[in-house]
Length: 525
Image 1 (spheres, rainbow, N blue to C red):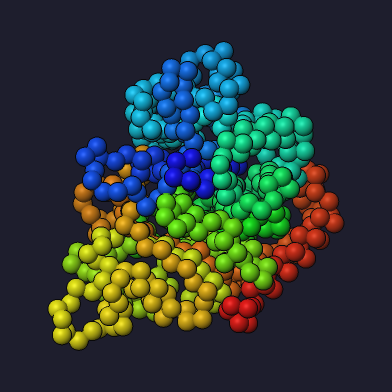
Image 2: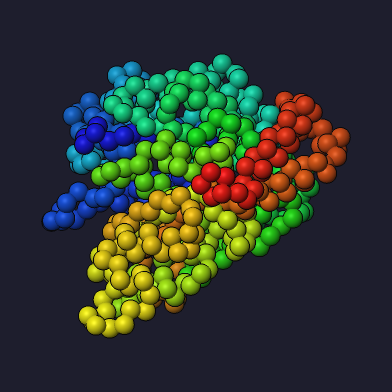
């Protein structure tokens, strides 16, 4: 890979993961386009970490995501399973056989979406993630699970045990292993795997088996898992709600056992059965019932918190990022983001941070409740998209300084000192980037009128991953809710391949995980 990129292979498991992934890849693709007369040096982020180069039989270069995704029958809409770049299956077979070769219609540019795509869909027309994916995929990317249906009441992938059993079947296990070997063998320096996985349905079981496979076959590589949950729900469908609770609990326990790091991501207020209102962003207006909206916000947060292992210069490897956050058994972390970061014209970064005061500067995104008063053990923070002129105070020399932040000489120092003030004894890592987050269509227009009356193409974002004491209560409450369940009423969950002993084990593991986040010294906790 050019520049010695430390490659990452992405796995997307499930339909909501497909929504988040579609926004994620659209944002990556938008960031690839640079003006032809651009004089600035190569970008701060290295796209080769996520993308792979290929060459068509006609000698044209292609650039496609290094991606394996799994979804159910009926989830692709008009997208073909082998992707949209191929005209006949004989060519597909020839390309698959020859490894790195891919086909691509269009000019020989290093970009994923140079072939014509349909018009950008209206929000009302979007039913599945492939309706708004603007990026062409390699034929080895999409793996369809034919035995379960995306739509309809029957044949759904509802339970953790069903998901686990999929990757126990030779057909699907061999297909996944084949695709893994294809992508991994062409990497020069694979740093690890990032997994976007539905937590609320049977894909939590698929994720559990997939991470177990990765840990066994690729030991020493980073495995960072993002457990995804759609927006808030209602208590009108008891079976769905109970299954969601069970799948989430089983998923978190098994994923954390096999991953370097696990982070639940949701705009809901709680992982438990009691519905909580969706989280609030001061400068966004979104519909929490629309996966298209929720997934866009989560993808933007992901695009920011994953910056450390995608940097072109001095990247922090996935393994090192996980090691910083997961000490003393704290494998589960929370995420938060400020979307967009509220820097007003003629204001500096120190001004904005001082105005935030002692409040938590980001909106929580891990369904762990109100972040006020919680303890942070370790954190990784990224602020991106601010002009360099705003990074430090612009006060006239001799003017009394409003705060110690105004005395800092670099933006990096401002951010680091602010975080130190907020959480004095925390193991903290921070990055400041000029590169904003791209939000061009089909990204939904969610921005409040207070932000701008004009089209917004990119925004500044503050994102954070935290090893947080809030997980003590969140995981503990999840365990309490499980103990209250009368499983005889939900025998169908056990029929799907999970034993009563498995439930007892998950309860014990949840309680053990929760205890990791009790008080104690923030560094040695």
